[in-house]
Length: 187
Image (cartoon, rainbow, N blue to C red; front, side, top):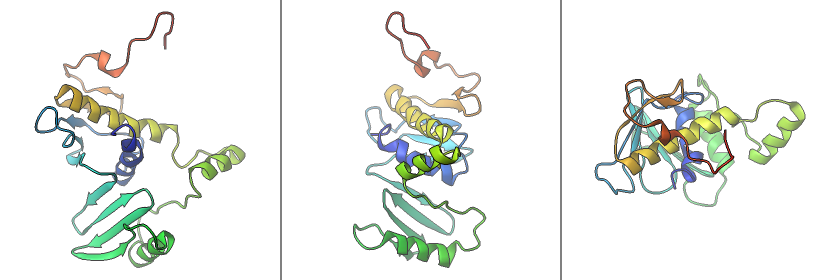
């Protein structure tokens, strides 16, 4: 599930941390080999742990946000400010309420998306990059692959997000970063 749903949700983590064109420095295995949750990636000391369920739960010093496809909740302290976790209701109104009340003067603003398909079609006409361009997509899926490697090999994986390879001094085989191709096929 990490390389399926993870690609959709780890991009939110990358965006929230300002790492859209970068990535983590380390991938960590779960506590026990064979566990299906608990692997983590570390971004300059900030640890993001894979849990059960679908979505992202970001916890900061003043509050927290839970986000999943078409649903979110914003809490400041113990107070729920805006919520659209249950199906139904008007997501747009809850987002506007949160933005108006708490994000009016934010240094970073969310973009308005017409949806992935419409955004892509608009970009074909305008020749601009889509909201989630190839770099953002590849960097997000790299995070999912790193978590899978940590689960599969049950080892810490030092990572260099600038070079998209194992960090200097890592003992991990380069073969982990690719695959064997059938005869006559090469990249």
